[in-house]
Image 1: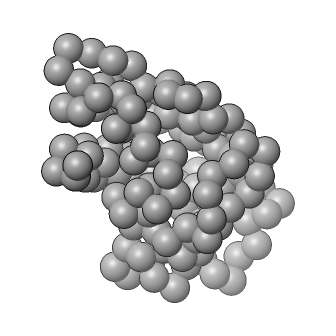
Image 2: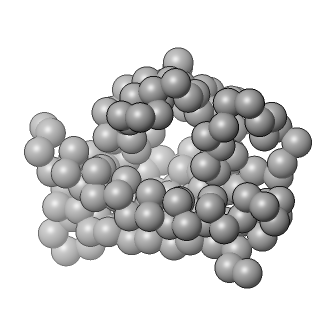
Length: 150
């Protein structure tokens, strides 16, 4: 049973620009397709309304763990929590970590989501599969957003 997903992408933009797209809740919402209720603050929870087509009826909540400008941002959440009739609050959340490093021509963005092995057995396979694919899509999304936006 795999416990973590790791994805990486190079973005043709300075670290500071990628950092802003990642940690400013309004910019995050643009590429992640969610309207966050407020800013990301270490030690606090923040939620938002998903705007991704087909999932607009869902909200997402994250608990921000760390914000270390301009290199590290992390939060916990309940992965693939798409059934509005289920209370996911009793599950152990996964940890999502973003690391940024300068590289020739821009920024290397690495995302690691860990803790899947602690999910209930009946949720593990779908959550791992969907988030594995989801992070590929989200990294392409932030890349496209940052590389076209000023």
